[in-house]
Image: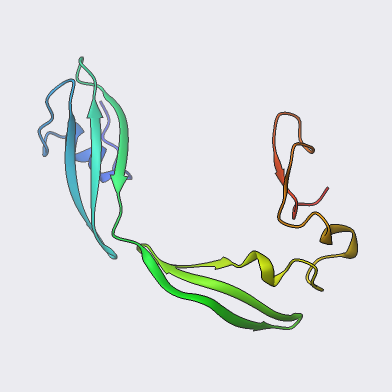
Length: 127
């Protein structure tokens, strides 16, 4: 079996550095730049790896409703930390604004069943 070095938890179990009892899951602690992450490697009854999940570093809201100036006007974002800093666009800052073409303003932010066969699309995607 070839070890996967791009998945440290799997690599630890495959190489025997972390012992795993068949039919259970082994926790592998991995130090990453953002802190410690726990990879839980599920091992089937035959000893094969059947899945991997992980518990990331704690996440939390850094700042809410932060105004961001752009060339088209102000947007509002929330900032959160979860191993990195992420921004999330606050829906209210674009609905009915000049950021959307007039034909898109009414459906902004809504999900629709139309679009690609078998798939749902967001109201902000090209139609």
